[in-house]
Structures are given as structure tokens and as C-alpha cells.
Amino acid sequence: MATPGGKTPTPSPLASKRVLPADPPSEVPHKRKNAGPLQSRLPSSGPFVEGSIVRIAMENFLTYDICEVSPGPHLNMIIGANGTGKSSIVCAICLGLAGKPAFMGRADKVGFFVKRGCSKGKVEIELFRTSGNLLITREIDVAKNQSFWFINNKSTTQKVVEEQVAALNIQVGNLCQFLPQDKVGEFAKLSKIELLEATEKSIGPPEMHRYHCELKNFREKEKQLETSCKEKTEYLEKMIQRNERYKQDVERFYERKRHLDLIEMLEAKRPWVEYENVRQEYEEVKLARDRAKDEVEKLKEGQIPITLRIKEIEKQRCDLEAQIKQKATDIKETSQRCKQKQDVIERKDKHKAPQLPLSVAHPEVTESPL
Image 1 (spheres, rainbow, N blue to C red):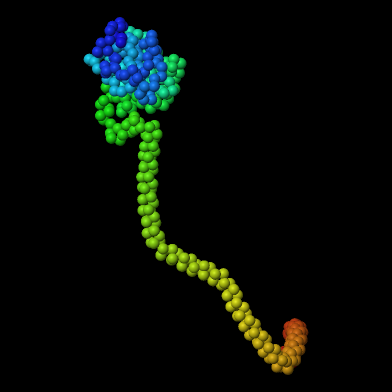
Image 2 (tube, rainbow, N blue to C red; image 1 turned 60 degrees about the horizontal axis):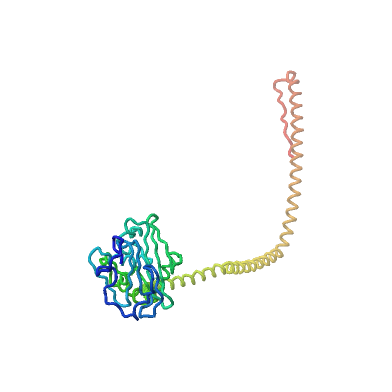
């Protein structure tokens, strides 16, 4: 195992290799002879679980120049004093499996995990698969603070790596599956619900948490439906009560409508009734007129002689009036002639007056009656 100084001394108990007793040869993944520290292993048919880490290799990573760790298929423990690089292996596992630096609670940039004084660092994680081990390589560029990804030594993207890791049910962001030292406090603060969800994601099949989420969604929908049903039931009760209150109003309304319809019908019939009344009055007046006409005819027949007599008398009256008018005209003319003659006589008398004696009186002129 590499030391911080860059030399490769004999492995010590404080090195990053696991310190458990060596597993039987049948349980340890087969290691090729003369293989370099960053070379991949061949698939193994040992008791490793699908997705188990069979090799961790680091180069210029935190306290290590070059280091390789080969975990066993069972419990693995790394024991050592403070500062010997135990947490560095944990960081390598997290970053090598496409984890974010924030998952470890140390640094927010991946470039800070490269050994000081080096421009590049490298992490390799080999995962067990029955179809062939999966080798994930992450090269870190300090200057660009950028990572380059490789799967089985072929260039790829971080998204593809995340998909491959998720397919093996590896969750470095799940505190129940991957618990860094600096995240112990957050793990202790998890509620029972959050702890249950994290456990489901960690040990259960992928669909377990999805089913759980769907179950919660169904429960929420059930609560919403119960609330909605309760509200609608209360609303229905209110509507029934309101309907009972409005029932009398509705009855009165329909009764009023019936009266209005009757009034409308009677209003429509009123002209016919008025016409019938007027027609009857007209017939009665017509009968009275005919009776009066008959009486008038009878009276006229009875008054014919008197009428003839009145006409004769009227004719006589007219004749007499004409005679009287003629006589009056004649009298008027005679009076005018008499007056003229009198005037002539008076003028003659004035001329003859001195010659006559005083005792002689003028004879009076009298008009003879007509």
C-alpha cells in the first residue's frame, strides 16, 4: 500500500488493506499474475453478491500516492490511527461510484480530493457481476475541477455511470447504505419515516420504495377522497335541509304560478266575455228599437188624418200670411202717397195763408180706414 510520502514500503497493520483474516481462496476474486495496481480482475464465481466491491484502487487521492484495497465477500473492517487514510478509502468509494462530494460533508469540489501538489487523481472501483465485473474509473483534473469517466477502460459519461450503479442497487446518497463519518449526525436526525424509506431503498428491491411511494400517494388520495366525500356528504345534508326549507316556498311558487296562469287565461277570455255582454246588450237594444219603430209606425198611421189637416191649415196660414204681407205693403204705399199729398197741400196752404181771414180754420184731413 502506498504511503503519503510516495514510497512503497512493506505493508503495515495501519495500511488501507483489510485486516480481517484472509478469506479462503474460493471466496476471494481471482487475481491475475503480474497484474498492476490499477488493473481489473476477472469475473469470479465466489460468494460475492451482485454489485459487491471486489477492488478499490486510488492514485494521488487524498493521503495516498498509489493504493489498492481488495475487500472480501463478508464483513470488511479497516483499522488504523487517526490520519492514516481510513476515511480516504470511504471517499474513494463514494466518488468512484458517481457520488457527489457533498455526500461526505467535507468539500464541495471534487478537485479538493486530489493529493496536494498533484494535478490529477484517479479512483477505480471494481464491482462484481455474474455477467462480468464492472470496472468504473474516475479521473479528476484539479485545474478544471472536472471528472472523466471510464467503464471497463472505455470513455463514458457520468449519467451512464450513475445508471450502471443504480442498476446494481448501489446508493451512495442513502445513509442506510453508505454512512460517512461526517454524516453520522444527520443519520441520527432522521425521522422514523425517513429511516424506513432509506432502509427500503437500501435493502429492498427497487420496486419496494416505488410501491411504498405509490401506497403513500394512494393513502393521500384516499384521505383527499374521504375529505371530499365528507364535505360532499355535509353539503348534501345542508342541501337537503335547505330543500326542506324551500319546499313550502316552491309550493307557494307553483300555487302562485297556477293563479297567474288562471289570471292570464281569464285575461285572454275577458274580451270574449265583454264582447258577449255587448252583443247581448246590442240584441236587447235592437229589439227595443224594433219595438219602438213598430210603435212609431203605428203612431204615424194614426196621425195621418191629423197630419193632412195640419198641412191644409199650414197651407191656409201661408196663404193668409202672404195676403197680410201684401196688404201691409199696399197700406205702406197708400200711407206714403197720402203723406206726399198732405205735404203738397201744406205747401199750398202756406202760400195762400195771408189772403185768408184769420177766423177761417184749416179743414182737418183724416185718413179713411182701409
